[in-house]
Image (tube, rainbow, N blue to C red; front, side, top):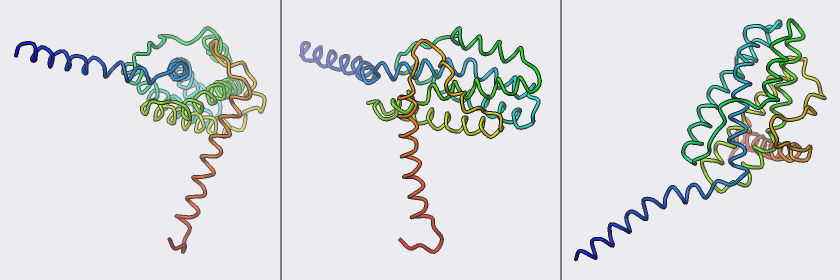
Length: 216
């Protein structure tokens, strides 16, 4: 009887201890990289967005800075919560390159500030877009897939907002991405292709299901 009870206890402990390990095993190197890079992006793009909100010489730049900063506050809370669950250690500060970007933007004034902010921020978003799309397509973890989708949606929205200022340069996406894990042009094209396919499918469904007078 005692041995039987002991066996039940050991089995329960094994189940309880095994669950986090199985969840953790679902997270691969690309998943971890996305969490780290999103955290680093939030650490510099949130504060510099607040500066744009306060110091932008154009009203649209100030509006865009506020919206991006608000989004990064929310995204930072999400990435820290998910990283805690999947046991990924996040950095506490941006990369050296990101700090240099912040310093460069902060030192500018007037229209020069606006232009630097918009194009540096746009380049940073472009550099992470391919990775977020790759994780969205390939991760085995449901929570990670949902977060990657949020990252993809956020990056697309932010790039559109930055471009709405009218001062985004077409060459801004060629700026070297932050951090040591650079994404090549093929990664960005892959991400854009995935997003385009998803957007096209959504648009098609809207046309079929939402067109006035169309019957199911």
